[in-house]
Image (tube, rainbow, N blue to C red):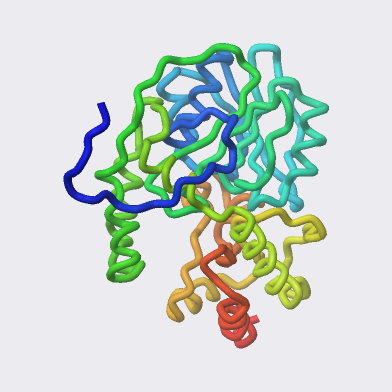
Length: 316
């Protein structure tokens, strides 16, 4: 029975989330684990250039894995064959690789798409695809899963009220003061069981203006690209950007990241674990140390992008 009275709750908009028909789970890595469980794959091919958290479900389930390399377009180097009980994971890097996914979907039956960096890229029909909500929005957890499997796991609902402090601190005392809580939240999310998305994350995701968020990401991305295209060693097609995660600037210098941080422009490294998996001669190793994922998300305007460019103009 619904309680009446008492203290007032945190007031959040009640609307509709972006993927109402997809399975709503607690984390992206657990959405990945869900696929592996219901499809019963025995082994998988993973890119060297990926986050180490994807190994969690593989270790849990005892699934063998092999790494593959990518080329300078961040397309997979297909020097392997995928057996009937094996699968092949590809990452939609920065939300810019949808054309590659469409091509791969025609080549591989057992393809899994990691759209953790591509929230606004719609899943291809019949293609196992997972999303990580907290990579794009201010939620403590949450993931979406598209799968053609008819098998459904019985799951409990997750609770995220104890994983909310970094988001509150960001509003009240600034992002730097909430960063340690953010790190601790990442640790807490490790090795958790598959659960349904928490009611808190779902409520937040149901109140977001997705049209505005996507527009702002596209606009900021192109604002940077108009200038940086002449300096960027990573060539890509920017004609159909669709709410990308960040602007991937690849340059030869390794000092620019430090200079940006000094100006309070925080640029994440994707991914430090790759340096342990690869040699210095490998392209993935070079990407990890030289690629700058510039922030372009919906928090920012062209004035913020101009600030980034003003710093880069002194360094490039």
